[in-house]
Length: 69
Image 1 (cartoon, one colour):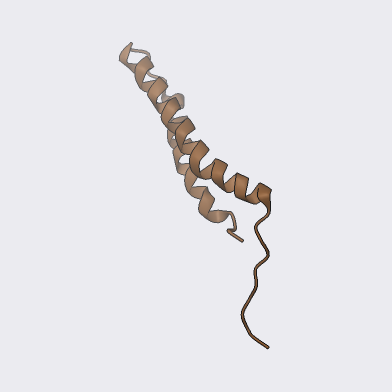
Image 2: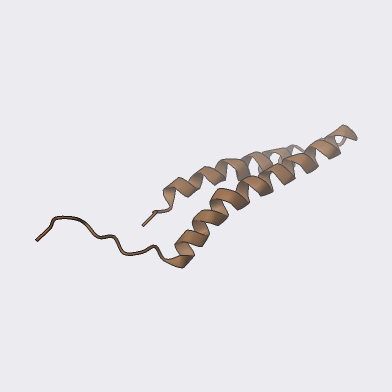
C-alpha cells in the first residue's frame, strides 16, 4: 500500500470560476479605470468609477481563495 494522496480532478465550474476571477476581473477593472480617466480629462471626475475599477482589480486576487483541486 502506498501513502500517496490522490486528488479527484477539479470540477469544470470551479476551474471556470478561477479563470473568470483571475482574468476577467482585472480586464474589467482596467476598462472601468480607463473610462474614468477619459471622463476625468473632460473635467467630470467620477470617484465611484475609480473606486470600482480598483475594487475589480483587487478582487482578482480572490482567485487564490478558490481551491485548485
